Image (cartoon, rainbow, N blue to C red):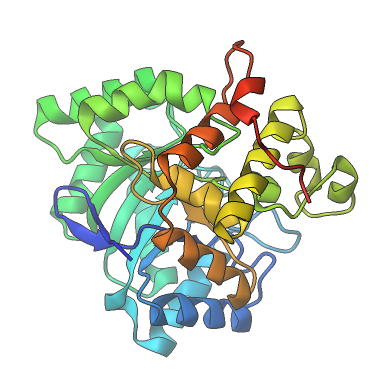
Length: 332
């Protein structure tokens, strides 16, 4: 496994980031501990969560994922082995949302308590807050860095225009700036990131941490047809990927899987890792067996021909794509 580095502090991180959104949602505490132990025992250290995970589950109020991670840190003693990322900004109820300075401070302290730690390695704006001046938001984040409570700052769900503006505000003020971006990006969902965000990412040399890197499971090969999505937790979300381009992507993934003997999930993550400025795709697991696909992705080197096949299958412009699929096998 070739580690990568986070931000100007050059913090070594594993090339795949473990998504903690499932902890306290579809994965209970005991299973979460087992997943986290297996992840770190294999030398992987990058873990993502957010204060809002998983408020959407009936009976939850938010903070469940952070709480489980905090209990695991205390139980395992592995806090120093982990590069921990969490986020602030989404609606936690009772008016707790956004990126006002006072709320950022309040939310950071709440996350630190739940996580049972005195610092966050990567603290991210979970979503842009256009009602709050960027100067106020970035000063508040900078204060957390100066206080030693945060090491690196990042953004998620920003437009290219707002991301560039945030970078310029921080640089002009001499504050710590966003050094990472967490966008929705995968083999199927490409256009918004590549057209709008990638130029800004390249300009400011940001590390990109794609979420939905497996398109809610669509790219794993788990779903062969729309009918396979019925009754599944993420079924309604996966249905949107079953268009003509989605079918071509599945065919290309299957072709490369046959050539390499590697599962489609690993191939989809390896494609992301080949893209410019990608730091580590986020992928979650609901059991330790699923982690093996993530481990495999970290060591998988696809050939230029295989990468080209995948990229062409996922093209979103109007250019005919059939020639790129020559030799592709049907989805098994």
